[in-house]
Length: 256
Image (cartoon, rainbow, N blue to C red):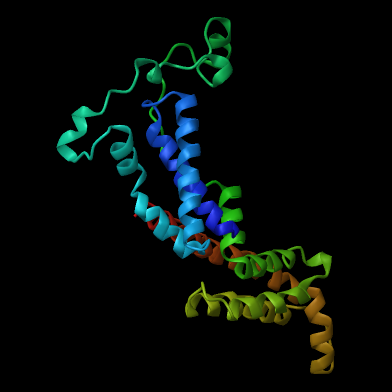
């Protein structure tokens, strides 16, 4: 069983558990999900333990999490007009949790943190945090993540790691994520900035090769590092958008 196939099954079970909330007790949900997992594993075994595409086919046989819960937990197939047959969510489901479970503080603590007895704020749309976004890029586009990391190593020019930019440039050119324009920016901007910085060197050299040898470590690496920082800020959002689009596509494939 591959890790990707297992993750698809776990994501599906998680969605089913969310739909079951308010319709079953915690013990009932656990028992139902365990039985559902066993049925999924049985179908996978009958299909010869297929890969991710085969697992998606197996999950489609069960239907979307909402359809599965309506069909099996309500005792009949429901359509849109049958929504009133679903029992309402228990009153305690909307009850404000106590402070030790993340709810607002009461009494003296409410004066200190300013929470008081205010009603719970409506849930905000989930946003991709900086750490989660970086992890997603690393997992989805490892070559592009390596290129971005190598570019960041050239920013502190006093480290003497400007040579790693060559590896970053090779990964950018070979990328299947960034467009042709992105590749021109990722490779051309650092080269141009490095050349301009070398021209601004105020030293003296009689021969061109001597000029390059002295101006490159003096001012060229500074221009290269600053341009690599700007390039990182340009390329990273594009890699993140591609990673997020791929994640949404996988979620739709499992749910659909």
